[in-house]
Length: 272
Image 1: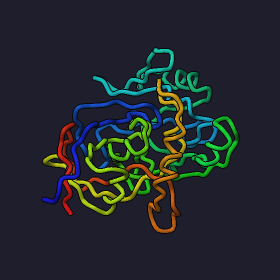
Image 2: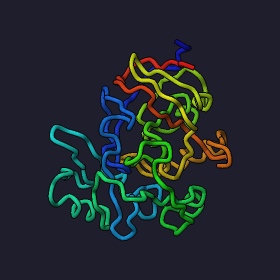
Image 3: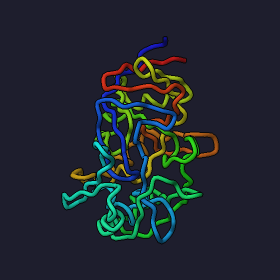
């Protein structure tokens, strides 16, 4: 076995794509990521696209809602403190009212699952309510079919990168926060590597994660913080893949080579 990269500090799943998530002590991991992660999503009734705060003018309110898996299913906690279960008959009405736009909660991706991603630099310069350029992004290019992942089934962020940026890790919506000893964006060097997490799980790190406007937005009680994008834009411009062009990156995406179980405190080791 290769060298130690770090240890798992946080395991987090997001039962509903685009909403705040839930920390857990441990989770099963399949080729589709953490158990229950992004198992549900909201679809905009008007456009047929998956709702995402990547387009903050329309959907930044999603980050005032949170979702958790509890015995019997998924529960969504609304901004007023009330909650609704995912299988309640009135769930679509309750979520549409909370977000001010008609949505449907679903476990089945649309035939061509896509979302709108506002150009992050324009969001920074023009503000959250401005009509800025929006790019359509098809989901799951690096994930198994039938999932709601932006790209790959797992997203890893290191404490070294978080300390370099100076913001909270939750803003980057990671599945695993890896406690590392190095300085700066150490996970950049993991791209293409295979890493073992604990005694069972093996991942292949695929590409650095390009950042959108989401980390800069309010996350529950956390205020807006534009440094979550400005800092990597100033210090970590990376080309995630050939032809993509340099982008501000924090964290890495990964695919699952060997399923198993991950637990906080697990050692993360380089395989090769």
